[in-house]
Length: 486
Image 1: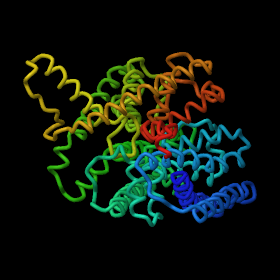
Image 2: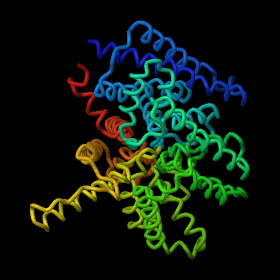
Image 3: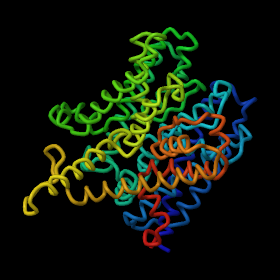
Image 4: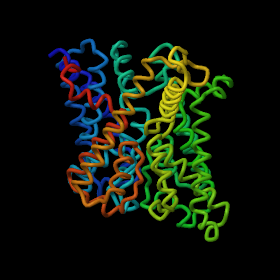
């Protein structure tokens, strides 16, 4: 009972902080004078309800010490609660089903970027801003932002570890609060820099800000149905520069923030000696070469430079799980689609805003396999240490990586099977959609109209997959564990 009391208290605190953010689009609505065609109550009602419910829970229930398992369950439950509340503006404004609104919000908070909406150019700017803001909030994890309002240092530490258990073991600073401040300073700085560059390159201020929010967070929501391809298709004079800017900041968002911090501190040895960074860059370059070769027939139509740029953009977009597109991914070569599926699986770096299994975990699994093969080929008495680069890997780290990988594969298999049975998608399409949802990528190899009509069961499982992928499986499983709630 005490754990449940703690859960309700901390959910209340988060709802209070969330109500402030949910009211932010009201400013945009007032600036663009949308209050007649798009009443302010669409945001004021959910913001007020969130504030009232949050205050009631936070004041009525007392906080108690959280265990690591309970904290992970709180984190997982919090993502669903905030997505349910955050869906209300879509539901009120667009008169769509609540499930579709819930899907869109969960896709935003998990930075998946899959959308059921069309005609984005016709939506009110306040609603487009809310879509972009959900991705920016979720980029570093919902709770990493709301932990600032918690007064209990122990609870802050436990909840941070619960949601950021995927982060690198090395911290920015010994203190949790200072680590959060550094993390959000880097994140905010990258977002501002991206917005300024896009604005200088000719985007309107609103488009520049919205796309910066969804680029650095590696979310991929755009204000246009054609995504980033819209700028070239509309004849925008800065389309090429915009693509390169977004490409660069997608890469930065998908790279560990610990690398950014070491770069700012001029710890060059730590940067150049980062095994994951080296594997990450080699993976991107190798995938770009393969994609460029697979779709080489496009060179005659668009030219060599445009082909290389497009190949690199799509590889970085998929690998960082951002999901922006400059071409129709369904029209690409079969080999390119297979490469994209592999990139969806691995995703970006640990400690970044990207989704997926993570490059570091892939490297760790490879080292575990390599060590096992060496042991099998040599005498049983020989000691073969488990290392990654020059760093020894502990048994706990190896087991945790293996557990997450197994959970990931099981979740993928379940979502793939259920969505194939519950929809009219073929096996290839449902695999790409399941992998895209679990990896928080966005693009998949299903026609948009077919995806929008997959049915309620498939949409529910895609929502579960998006949240499970963002939290990296284990917290979702703990929701159903009675031991975690004791």
